[in-house]
Length: 136
Image (cartoon, rainbow, N blue to C red; front, side):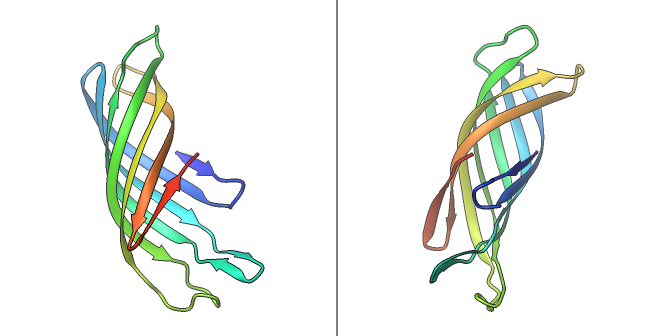
């Protein structure tokens, strides 16, 4: 999955694999990369950087309609953040981070053992002494 935030120029890439022990319940393991660019506004600058996560996710399908299955999800992960290094922020830094999110989406089976999905999620990322919200 690839997303682009048109307001800040950020992007998110995600890949996941999972299994469905029951037709209404999925368990996934995923890897995510989140990049936020450096932003300069007047005399203020936000460093930006790249965070990578390994996460676990659960999905529950309350109803099924023909071939489309809507679901709700919750995920949590841990990873590493590497803030941007440039002329404004010359010191390289690496921080431990965590990520939690909730959302919903739809799953469409392509074959008996392969499905495509699309979802929307909102969450929180925590890094050192900062927690910030992530919205689509």
